[in-house]
Amino acid sequence: MAADLSALRTNLTNLLGDKLVSIEEKLGELTVVIKAAGMLGALKRLRDAAGFEQMIDLCGMDYSTYGDGAWEGKRFAIVYHLLSVSRNARLRVRIFAEEDDFPVLESVTDIWPCANWFEREAFDLYGIVFTGHPDLRRILTDYGFVGNPFRKDFPLSGHVEMRYDPEQQRVVYQPVTVEPREVTPRIVREETYACK
Image 1 (cartoon, rainbow, N blue to C red):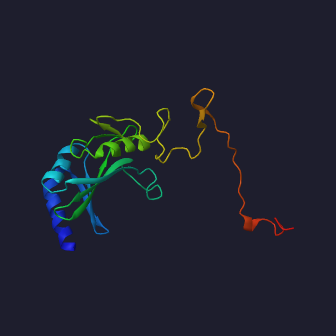
Image 2 (tube, rainbow, N blue to C red):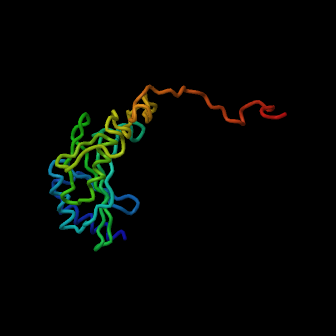
């Protein structure tokens, strides 16, 4: 297995050339970091020349508090999990968006059509925009939802709640009615609680 990873590492280093930022081995898999500029060409080479014909997952990442806040680098990244059935190999590819304020990367739907909904999910939950995507819109949250819930700076408690109003026959937003409370575990309460 180690020999296979070593050979794959050498092949990927030669194949990606100046687009390769870093390559590391952990838990028996390789993780490759690629530059955002020219990412489509590098990913096409991985598909066509390296044989990673399937993209099995794509996820967004927010590194703002990674490593207890010790992270020094770009904040948002997309991680692609690729599979080569013919070579029985897996590869993790990470690409960081150049800007933290407005993260933008290119869509890979022309390379792997299955990326469509994965990119919509990363757009909805992290606010990462994919240029060239055929239908980039929210997929999990409501269209009127404000913010991106998987960002590390997203507030833990909201200010409005959504419910269906049968009188208006539509969804309405109203201020949150849940009051914060302290829940004390039963083992901390007094001994005579609920005893008669």
